[in-house]
Amino acid sequence: MDLAEIKELAFKHLGNRKAHSERERGFIYYHGQRVANIALELRKMILPADDANDEAIIAAAYFHDIAKGIEPHSYYGSILVRDILKDHCSLEELELICEIIRFHQFRDKSKSYNDYVKIIQDADILDHGGVVEIWMNFGYFVHKDGTLTDSLEFYQTEYDSLAEKMRNALNYDISLEIYDEKNRFVKDFIKRLNVEAYGEIYLKHN
Ligand SMILES: [Fe+2]
Ligand SMILES: [Fe+2]
Image 1: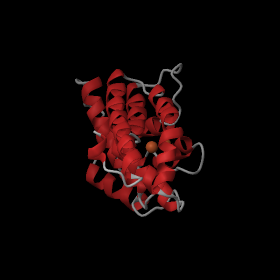
Image 2 (image 1 turned 120 degrees about the horizontal axis):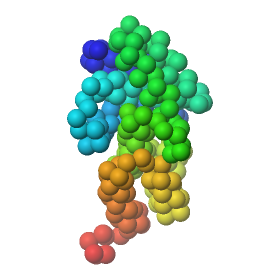
Image 3 (image 1 turned 180 degrees about the vertical axis):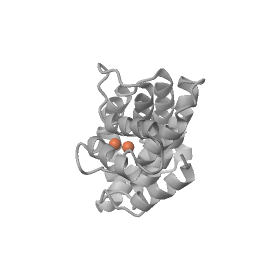
C-alpha cells in the first residue's frame, strides 16, 4: 500500500469538504489524520509486537468518517471506501480497512470487535479531547454567533456529562489514562475561561 498516495486520495475526497456547518472546511480530513497518528501510538502500546496491519489501520483512520452525515456513517463509509481503495491495496487489506470503518461507530462492549476496530474507536474518541475539544467548542459557538460566555456556560453545564459519556465508551486502560490527562487540561482551561471571559486577571486568582 502506498500510504502517500492514500493520503492524497483522502485529501482529494475530504480536504475541501465542509461536512458540518459549525466546523472548519476539511474537518473530516484533519480529524482522520490525527486519528491515524493516535491509533498508531495506541497500537504500539496495546499490541507492541503486531505492526503487520499498521498501513490498514492508517488508511482506515484517514477515511473512517467519509460518509459522515449519511447515517449510520460507518456502514455507508465502508461501502464507499471499498470502491475508492479497491485499486490501492490488497484484498486482505481492503477487508480489514472496511471492517474497521464499518464498526468504528458502534461501541457496544458486549460485542467482541477485533483489536484494530477497538483501537480506532478509542483514537476517534481521544481526538475529541484536549485542545481539539476546545477548538471544536469555540468553532461551534463562533459559527452560531455565540459569545465567549456561551462557551463557558456549555463547559459549566454540559461538558462533564458529555466527557463522562465519551470516557465510558473507551476500550483500553491506556486510552482512559490519556483521556483523563486531556480532561484535566480542559478542566484547567475552563477554570481560566471562567476568569478571563469576564476580563478578570488570572494571576490574581492564584
Ligand atoms: Fe465516525
Ligand atoms: Fe471520527
